[in-house]
Length: 413
Image (cartoon, rainbow, N blue to C red; front, side, top):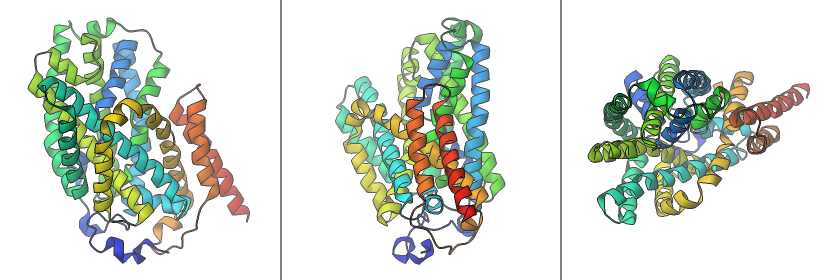
């Protein structure tokens, strides 16, 4: 059955959760660039930057950012091309790659991880801010979570507005803090030399790739609104490379200079309390909007509920569980994250090897592609159990092998 035959879902859905985005709703470079850049501005990436800053010298840090950034940007850039070319969300792409019912597994993984990270993100803002201001953390958690839910449920228009406001604030205040820390520490080389040498360049590259490759798998959900493929690819590649690198720099320089792994605490140490709250709130709001939007699309695919309703329900759940998720579930979220790169590589291979399924609007969908589903499960297991190499890459290689076996078997039939 085609997605176009579901009027009960698409009739009043401005975000086209169950159909391809039409040309009339596409957006230009500036709009998409701010959305994608805001997506990559994630506080957890600064913790990765702190690990890099504490484990590598300046040259090693730069090399890890460039090599890992190129690989990460290439992966997300390809997904951006697919999202823009088809106009489909990741969940609709998964319907073609895994089958209609099979896509429920990919949507469940996407939904759980993104709603979970939304809750963690709310707590990452509310807990330290409440401590700083001397207010109840639950009150701030509820207020922040509901505000983020409202903007995410509003859809791409709100995502664009929030990102357009937040991105410049984060860049200006973050760069000021970073430059000040570097100057007080005697220059970049001196700051990095304080604690460099505990990790290898290969490990650093793995940190960079692993920092956002799972979240980057959701790229089609946002970039499907791009005006054309060129806008989609360039905005994604630049945003992922620039955004992640900035987050790493904020975390690395602050971590090496102050011993803290978050720009919030770095700025507090610099006597910049109000700017710290602004940067932390803006940083988390942009990423949380995208995470909850992805969660809403995923739940919509499984339940056929309207995206806005699914997003609101997801936001309420994520907010209610935010503090518990922050203290108890982060490890499990990292395990679930390992299933996302296999989903992405399977969609990529399927798109380029079976293009007809993605070009035709009314193509009949199979119930489930068991080879592709097995590849996702095997890839996730490999990422968690194989300690050699880079976890995300291991997961994608295993999933790709399963896909190619299934593709060859289908061709023989």
